[in-house]
Image (tube, rainbow, N blue to C red; front, side, top):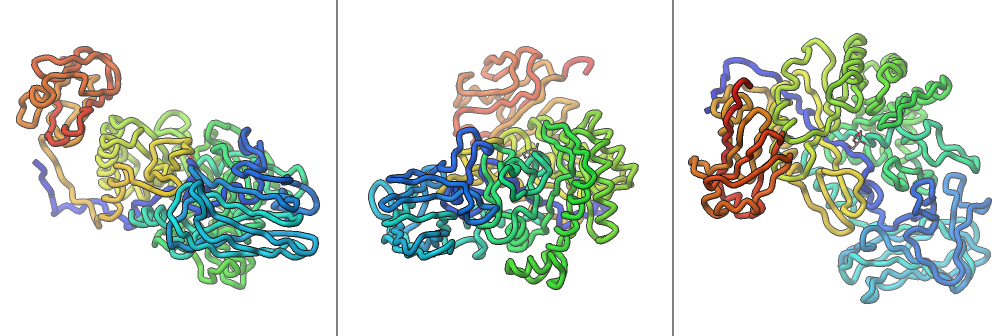
Length: 611
Ligand code: AHR
């Protein structure tokens, strides 16, 4: 039974409570949310990105075709180009199974070309069954210039190939094919953007994650030995796409920055969410424990952060506001929050630098909330030190991250009940229970009720990671999955959607009896699956809702139809599935038979004496 107490006012829940965290992991950007269909369009893939890469990765050539890095390049930030002799061709195979097109849809082709005199280019879109659109002819003349053509797909295919062939020698770069129909016309893949928008997120944290705070903190240099493993820095990612220097991604692939800071701001605006960027703090995280001691570099990064705020919010007469206007957005993007750093393992070194960022930002932009963080863990000495420093410095908001088992999420529903009400607020920037099954989603839902109960202290929360291309996975679980032609939601997505689309105004204090409890017999029930933390119990039995042994029905005591995690010995006794030793902790029990979810299942456990 649940008893509510409407007379007592609970915490106010901010409209901005739930958002999303977008990181370019699992090919979330190139080959994902960024709608470009050509992979390695600028021939900049390099072994520095990934040992299996060459400048011709995802390209096949016929005739005489070679990649060149010399003074004839398109520009200093786009160094390698393709030289084709007459009678040669180059074919791109896109992402996953190929270039994906839909019958009747329009696709915009573009290419930068340089030639002596004139070169007639033929551009085709085909799959193994033949043409996917009528071929196009483009005539290139003279020095580097951009040429365009439009394709209309005559068939639907997920295995397309884009081929450019030439009758005479030509240099090519930035070979691109983008669907005309992108989300709100801003260059993002529509189905993925729509899935994110359907969550109705209040904020978008971006661009990382480990992506931000690892690699060299040096900026892009136009010398020939320029850094290929730079931390993600916003100035590298704006302006004309052919002038954005690609970079080695922390997650082991090349990032084109076609989806850059301007696009992140635009997307946030398009889905009615507040942008929440994360900038590097000059202390590497994510297993690379290194503090960069370079005062000039630190000052440059702090200035870059001030410039970022000006890019987002400054008037069109300001230096960076003018660049925003030039990119097509004269109005400000209304940046209110900004995070410095991600998961630093060196709290003292991090905090030294954080304080300097914060002082500079607050001096110029006192209304911006500067978010600090607490390292990569949910507890422990690094976490405690980080929190101590944040409390002592009266920081506004601290970013926490954790990825744990479903049982952890159930056991820690009260995590924030004891947080200091006068201390910094919490931004739960990354969390997930380790899996995409229903039990994971349910444990997250249970945990989120604890976030809401503590909405006076937990101000923002975002599940992580958001997107995964099924053929390029570095991290799981993920909220939304996709390939080159389809996308689908996880069970965890449905939980996020439920909470995000139904944010309450105020918590109504309530008490419950008869709900699953770790301090007494477990009698709670769920439909699809259920679990028991067995450490404190002598045995765990799975029964039907009315108390009869579930396994005596359809499963007829057949233990092979059941699976569990967590170890320990399980057997069927008296038609019930029973754990018969104490070895397993956080055990998940579920049925292999889909018919099982027709049952209302209870887990019963006998409490161990003395626990
Ligand atoms: O969300 C995936 C990764 O998890 C993030 O990049 C990092 O911040 C965390 O360790």
